[in-house]
Length: 116
Length: 109
Image (cartoon, rainbow over all chains, first blue to last red; front, side, top):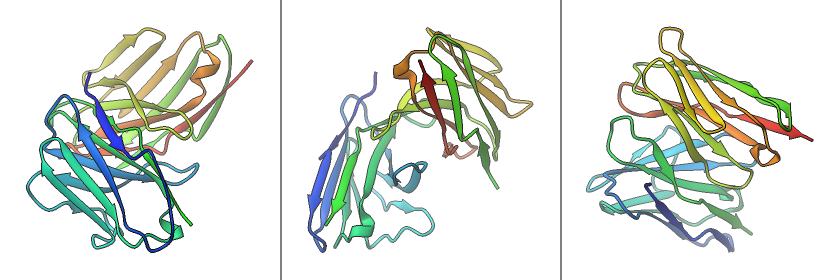
């Protein structure tokens, strides 16, 4: 089945650091990838839709200058949390699907970000 | 607006059967998905329904009624490892996934 790889799995860093998270589709091409954030004991929250070769579409309330998304190829999207602060600490998860249809999205393993 | 409702939490006994319901109101419909998410992990795909009826996959089955905007996930022969959150999601007319808040399932011995 479709596999999505996400790295790193865990990041601990100081406040003010920028952190880059990679999401790769390993056995299929993904024109669209999705970035989610999940706080403890809360539901998934879609942050943005990453479109290959064009600008990402951000959900309301998500700062595009804070969360930079680059989707340079059909198999790679990156999320950079710029100048991270403790309130950015969360579980970040990417997903990708094989085309529009009724194909499910497959998730990466997630990145647990802790800002000290 | 678009809305997906599912119970917040359910409790069941090991070896028993549990049904997790999901109702939805979306602009268009292009399939309904169920995911399992263990604490601290990413969701994993369980099943999808696009036509009315029951889809069976081992101990898990999922049912859909499009006219009623209703689905359920049925888990049989419950095991302790089935303790997790179960997420219902619907693809709308724009193929955007709309997520429910998830149902936390607690399995007791």
